[in-house]
Length: 597
Ligand SMILES: Cc1cc2nc3c(=O)[nH]c(=O)nc-3n(C[C@H](O)[C@H](O)[C@H](O)COP(=O)(O)OP(=O)(O)OC[C@H]3O[C@@H](n4cnc5c(N)ncnc54)[C@H](O)[C@@H]3O)c2cc1C
Image 1: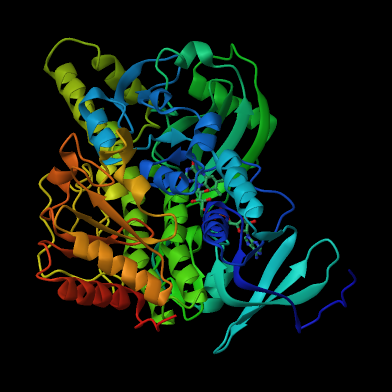
Image 2 (image 1 turned 180 degrees about the horizontal axis):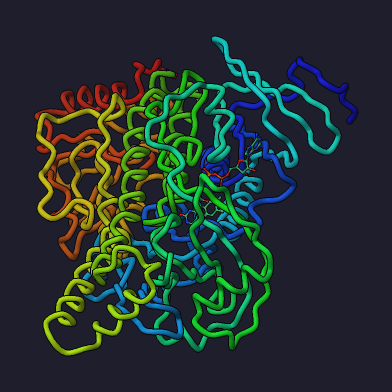
């Protein structure tokens, strides 16, 4: 098809236009296409990510992919949970080991916390795996994808957004008209800049060199499998991510090394010789062969937007939260932003919710942007405790560093102090490597949640380290195993799939009837879930009864993103009150009294 160069008139049209095919954009396209919303993606390059970049894939992200039917596919391609756990601190792979911290819930003492929280495992899945899995499914489900297409600008009006893009193969510019625009265009987001979103935080706080190379390092790591090995070496705590790092990409033959550089001075030239020198230092021997496949200087950021959307345009992912890879929150948060946004867009586009529902994206996710940027940067600062434990101010004082490392192995109070301080400093890194609460404890407060008048349950354990399930409105539906025809099924499997669900038990038939009647009247899909003896789902382990925080006849209204929207603790007085309460709850969340069909 020939296009005139530089046409301002829109020549393509869709309901939602997504800019970018990274984790945030690919996920937005996947969720929207699965729900049945007309979606188009434009992305700058002719390919998906060609470098592994983000990799830690947490349970919450896996739950979204399970909801999309993609969990098993990703598990087949990724490095499994049990190989992720021995985060090691050492002087080099071949050198002294200072200690290990069992990570990502792999330790016996933490594993049950993770298993209780989710039906999903943690995984190590670099972007080179996650992006194609999500984009292929999005395309198969109807999303239209235009590669080599660059976002240039947009204007919005009362009925939609007109976005100007450039076809990078022909140079032609043209417009795309959509009802809504999602900016998933990464840390240098032009969409966020064009929206003039307000940012907080110091910005660029350090530089990190990322060098990807192939080398068989099995003999140094196979017996302590992990995705991350951290090295205390002269200068390693300067800039970068806190220490020198070797990150596993493919066990145990593909690696990324990370080393800091001073942002103000700019990155050094990464020649093959320089890359080899850094790798030899981190491995601790030159007795290995390597082939450098990619090199990239990267900026460590501390920057988050305090408003992440304006009217019809929404930003997800690094576009609005820019932070270091510590805690592995990058692609996870980007995917979860899109999970929060997609069902809202779908319902509004379908005419099943008022546009005001979309405002709750900003209300619910902007606080998460702040939280994760601050957490990830704090984790770099916490790594400083490991250097401090050795009682060296500056690792470039090589003589002192070596003396302190030798003292660590010596009898006597000085050595004992170092040993104890190191153990404490490494254990403290649980705030990076076992921060299960950071991943799960979000509590949304917005117009898409109906408070039930109770106070948020206090956290009984450290909220950053431990996930605490609750059905308090605004929290995620707790996972546990119930049964259908005797077969085990997660509570999370009974909700989601783009629809609301209404959860009750024996004595709650009025809620089920009310949900079915409301659905029939308005066309809003609402799935009833009744759990109890003789009900469609049973609770033979009794754990749902422990977690649900309502009586048998009470009710939970659960949003398509698995968050509890409303709760009524007791059985309704009558069928009439059930119908009235449920109508109020759903129409409050949707922001509209839906018309009868
Ligand atoms: C070198 C590097 C290493 C990283 N390592 C890690 C790590 O180890 N662990 C971790 O958790 N995180 C890491 N990150 C961060 C992680 O990659 C991001 O958090 C994650 O990719 C964010 O996803 P996103 O979809 O928001 O943005 P991105 O993945 O950056 O995707 C942005 C998308 O937008 C497209 N795009 C940009 N501008 C335009 C435009 N004008 N028009 C059209 N398309 C456009 C891009 O081509 C891309 O498809 C790393 C990032 C980098 C750059």
